[in-house]
Length: 130
Image 1 (tube, helix red, strand yellow):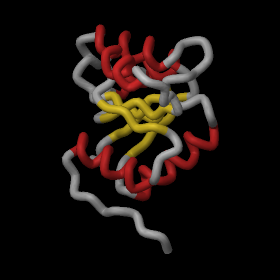
Image 2 (cartoon, rainbow, N blue to C red; image 1 turned 45 degrees about the vertical axis):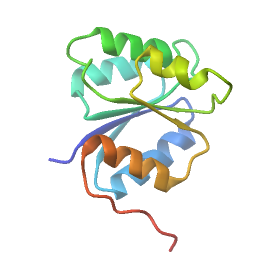
Image 3 (cartoon, helix red, strand yellow; image 1 turned 180 degrees about the vertical axis):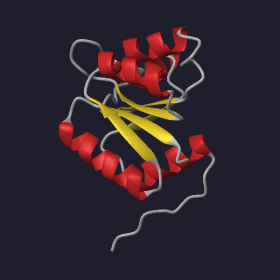
């Protein structure tokens, strides 16, 4: 069974591209467009990894990660913030909220792959330009 990754982003293009990249790397991927859906899918599927946008309407990623870490069923799932937040102190605030790691947008696909492989302990297959 392939490791399942939950990709959460309110931007449809990011979800489509991310899902495409992750499935081509050999992972299963489900997506959510908001925090409420992310929480429901996390509890239902217990993914191996969550890639979480921070800036979203209604419920931001910081609140999502706090709720995930407060639930014993989802607390152990690694959560990596994917965000454009790049001001001084943003990284520390994101990690303090409960995220395990941080990747600033825009990022290189190789950076995403290395990060995912780190948390899923899989061999890397670094993407190359074709």
